[in-house]
Image 1 (cartoon, rainbow over the protein chains, first blue to last red):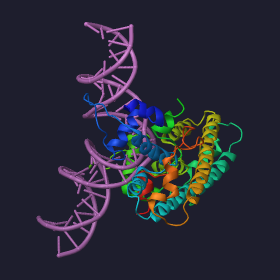
Image 2 (cartoon, rainbow over the protein chains, first blue to last red; image 1 turned 120 degrees about the vertical axis):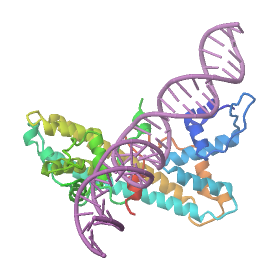
Image 3 (cartoon, rainbow over the protein chains, first blue to last red; image 1 turned 135 degrees about the vertical axis):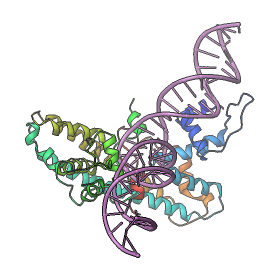
Image 4 (cartoon, helix red, strand yellow; image 1 turned 45 degrees about the horizontal axis):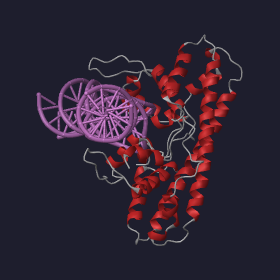
Length: 156
Length: 156
DNA sequence: CTTGACTCTATAGCGACTACAGATTGTTAA
DNA sequence: TTAACAATCTGTAGTCGCTATAGAGTCAAG
């Protein structure tokens, strides 16, 4: 099959497949005479693996590590558990941060229930003060709320 | 004061201050004869405002909007409330997504309690299957768990 | 033989910085 | 005075995981 079909069966944009290849997540496939990539079932499986990992929000570096274990079936998979535990830890930490953030935002919102003029807006005044010490983005290995290009275009 | 002191009192890296200036969040300050930027209290306040917003995970575009309201004190601040409500909505949505993700990861982790060889590892086998339909990253305007450069270097 | 769908490579853009390189400017100690 | 050193300047490239072009080539159907 050609790249378009692989894209269709795995639900992956064509450019993303080529990107994964550049990044070394997928091996360079054979080519037709006309230089088109040709794939088979083994490529479908490998790409599905990558996409499944990504749907679980793993970084490509983490996926690379998991792929290495997949390619060395005799090796002990204890490190797979370790990696997964670490990833779960990142997610849990981010959840805690966002819950704290939500509380701060809600309490900020309390400061201005009815629309008034900006000069006396409690929200704007509060934001001019330095942030409280318990602010987010202290713990490393987590990320903001706003989408990059992917998330922003997801609904289009 | 020079940029280093502004950086110190606001807890902001020097490069970030210059970046905000390039982005138009901070006005171009006056310069000394030797071309050094000079700041006063008004700059401290404005930068603190930006940093406080950022510590609440607002996008720079959202901060720009809030700054416009701050600079037009006569205007109605109802849109400030609207913006903040939208932001709270984004955070809440991301929390829900991450909770679902945490559950998926935990149930995946269940598949391999003791370390075994990778050929029979339940985790790796499960990841080879296509992701379940309720996967994350469907709802737009949200983001991954992994840090960019900022988060990754935060602990160094 | 042409149209159109598909594919190819290469490159730039997103957000919010971070990290240099290489040049100046300013401050302090010998 | 001078030399070392810190601080600042501009400009550019890198981060992550794609996405979106431009411009050229390949291929099947009509």
